[in-house]
Image 1 (spheres, protein in one colour):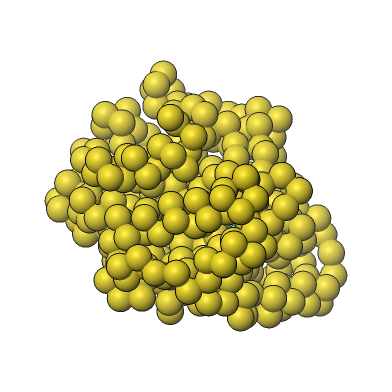
Image 2: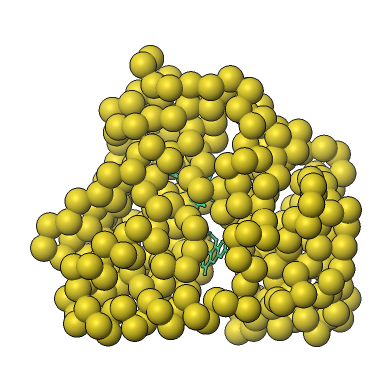
Length: 302
Ligand SMILES: Cc1cc2nc3c(=O)[nH]c(=O)nc-3n(C[C@H](O)[C@H](O)[C@H](O)COP(=O)(O)OP(=O)(O)OC[C@H]3O[C@@H](n4cnc5c(N)ncnc54)[C@H](O)[C@@H]3O)c2cc1C
């Protein structure tokens, strides 16, 4: 295999949380051919994009890891933007703006890749991946074959897609955009960026975006704020003072600190409102017994 591979790769530096141990082997494919060859050969690889929605275990990851950051090509034909899984979404937002195409204005404000955004059906400011994503090229890890799935087959929902139910890897995705005046698109993007200032920690303060998903017809941030979690600390993990649904790594937090703090937040909302929040952030890697316990409760697995 010709693909670049690094042994004992420290994942911490790759994540927006600045938390995580080592991957025994990290692969960096640059083409679809390299990626599919890896997916055919490796046993249960973990796929990671910008690591902006994950809590990576401080004890590391046992499986091989594929980091998609070098799968970063995209093409535009008329109003169809096709992007490989490792393209950073703010870059797509700017490309669409440059070509007076609407549908990606929301992507300007967060640091994900196309793979992570499709997997999560990322959304913000009344726009979602599912509004424009019309076709995905997927590798099925169980069947070891390539699939082409249309929008319906992707089964997009709130922070979900079929990829979370199956052993699927996104190779690339096509987005159908709508022509619109460039000034309007630029104004929306500016407004979206302004909205985040003060409401979300900047990436200078390590964080992983929203910690819990919104429950039906409510806001996780509102419930957490009313439950009084702002400022709570566990080790070096702290609930951000500016918004109760964000945890920041104040210095050298580890995955246990964050898991304990999340559990406290979960319990405080459950005690006050009998509502069980579900994590938006995904735990990846080796779990200690403590972490298994904490996450099983939050994921309703026991
Ligand atoms: C400051 C901040 C603000 C944010 N704001 C928002 C927001 O407004 N809206 C929103 O929806 N999200 C937001 N997020 C969360 C996050 O940026 C998005 O969910 C993003 O799309 C995740 O992409 P990623 O590449 O970082 O995914 P990762 O964190 O690397 O991975 C997330 C999940 O996707 C899987 N995955 C990644 N790539 C692939 C692939 N190619 N094939 C299969 N599975 C894959 C991973 O295995 C993992 O389970 C924010 C995060 C931060 C830090």
